[in-house]
Image 1 (tube, rainbow, N blue to C red):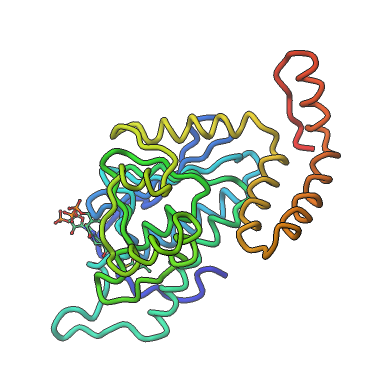
Image 2: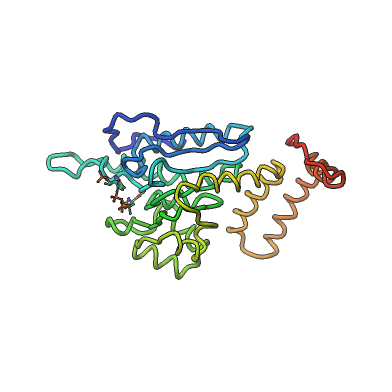
Length: 282
Ligand SMILES: C/C=C/C(=O)SCCNC(=O)CCNC(=O)[C@H](O)C(C)(C)COP(=O)(O)OP(=O)(O)OC[C@H]1O[C@@H](n2cnc3c(N)ncnc32)[C@H](O)[C@@H]1OP(=O)(O)O
């Protein structure tokens, strides 16, 4: 469904797994993009592996929070500019169909992150450019290392600055005027500015992004599965409803569902009895 044709990007290097999945804490899965020598740029293999990793976490009922990060000093440098064909003398360009499939496969990662039931935390350990910027924006929460940098790199390589959902997500995070500037210039935003703009929740020293993300993940997993699931769903849906009343109606419908869960009853009992709750996901 997400990979509906051949991707034109050549997988030239004999690489190990380009996405590593680990479970550093109960209920938390960390997806690490793993092409550090290319700042985790999106090769065909990495795109495919990310889709497969997302298939796995989506089907994993024990997974409560997903953390997305990069190996080495980069988060993700966007489309792999070295594995594109048609840029050398005598080399055939990719067909329009293959280009479309590749564009769709990369762009589909963004709604997939939004549509996961589990919250996604981007632990932005270094540069997040182009498609990598889009992946970071698609997360529910972003924490950044001091050396992280962000840019909508698309326009700097002759493409439209509006790609893979960035021109939809960015103005909702930082406002239209600032978004337009970043889309049109493609300039790099450092971690301190990203925090000022509201692009990231917090900036931590290099090497500490994963710990910061896991700290937030632990705060989330301390809440009930259904309550967290509904919060993510409604919070994103609110970005698309047109009025305050429509937003309240949406909240009311989902809140009634959570109000009848066993976990809600259990949390009230736990509060009254001054003990931690035990969730049954019901
Ligand atoms: C649908 C999606 C579309 C898109 O994503 S379009 C956008 C594509 N991406 C870009 O245009 C970003 C290109 N990269 C950069 O501008 C810079 O990099 C950064 C700002 C991200 C980081 O800069 P710095 O920290 O100075 O690192 P460095 O020395 O430029 O890169 C380190 C190594 O990583 C390789 N690399 C970086 N980006 C890519 C890429 N996108 N594709 C393939 N390789 C990349 C370099 O070449 C180099 O390698 P070596 O050490 O061998 O010289």
